[in-house]
Amino acid sequence: MTPYALMDRSRLEAERNRLDQQYRQLKAQGLALNMARGKPSAEQLDLSMPLLSAPADDRAFIAEDGTDCRNYGGLDGLPEAKRLMACLLDDRPDNVIVGGSSSLTLMYDAFARYWTFGVQGDAPWCTLPVVKWICPVPGYDRHFGVLEAFGVEMIPVPIRDDGPDMEEVERIVAEDSLVKGIWCVPQYSNPTGAVYAPEVVDRLASMTCAATDFRIFWDNAYAVHHLSDQAAATIRVRDIHEACRQAGNPDRCLKFASTSKITFAGAGVAALAASPANLSEIRLRMSAGVIGYDKLNQLRHVRFLKDEEGIRRHMRAHAALLAPKFDLVQRKLEQGLSDIGACSWTTPQGGYFVSLDVPHGCAREAVRRAREVGVTLTSAGATWPQGRDPRDANIRIAPSMPSLSELEQALDVLVCCVRAAYVDQLLAKTNEDA
Ligand code: PMP
Image (tube, rainbow, N blue to C red; front, side):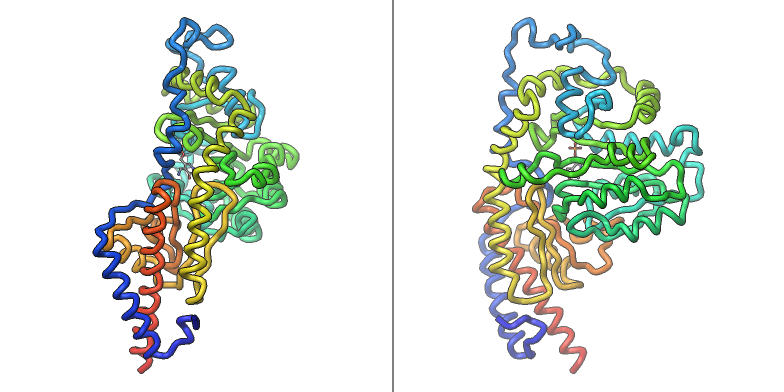
């Protein structure tokens, strides 16, 4: 088909009539589908059910160092849990603190501590006239939500296939000491699936920052979430902590990860890794608010996942459920949107999302129309700070939760709504031009 932008008015009108009819048919189906959030499906959660049926013998709650996991204590986490979480954080167990069930909470708390108490003796961020933070876009809406809660000024920087635009990042951090940090999802970035190149990691570690208390919040949420054996065998992001040490900035990064999308999204284990100096500061502040996190859950996770090899095996079972859904997304977008022009999307090798760019000015309208026929997508704009995508172009596709047949229906709706929004935009323009 001819790209829409090259069609004359009568062809656009014919296309609109066809899409209107298709839209009415979709509406008549009374769909109620949700592709808004990257939640694991019930089948994926079922893979971890053995977690709940650990043997009820008298060793079930005793850790390897003899700790009775039912009792208080152990702020750092069990030694065996630190070892397990070190696999996800690509760090040494010594550098790990195991938290509760959510890495987002660990990130929020880390930010809140710096906000309230400052970083290693520097002024608390709350005392500054403004705090700024670099946000690669499109990005993870909840990352932006953390900053929004504190009134931080967010600076969007475009993300490419190999990480954020480093020229832009280097320029921003060099000239302004109120820029205190950057969000990074280094592997299978939410939502584009970008994987940071080694040069990008090195540049982040070594760049000259005007702020002495600059921090990289390194969210390795999708560290082991490959969609194929080939990706598992070949994709490995350079260790930011190692790069920071080598660059003479050993305290620059805090790493985060969790098992939310490995075991149970609502009842997994989260952890952070950092330099010894960062860790002692974190322990000092953290211990005022918690005696120790849930060690029984840590123990269950260690016994279930075991080690790096155990995690790898388990993630292959996830990939078997997820890969067909990601393949379907690619097929449907290719069939449905490649001919009209001005649309592009990512082909991630792992993670939970596909990032779709539709013709500028059409994302919000397409998402609205989809909701009207019963398909809930992530709000257009959510992938940008304050929920405002200046081009109104980006839509995050989260294919994990629906079944394959539901996903197929939802993608048919999405395609129809994108096409219709674009046709209407072009027709409105021909009206203006007339
Ligand atoms: N970070 C990223 C990049 C995510 O996509 C998600 C989940 N969508 C999270 C963190 C949330 O992690 P958790 O469940 O450990 O809080």
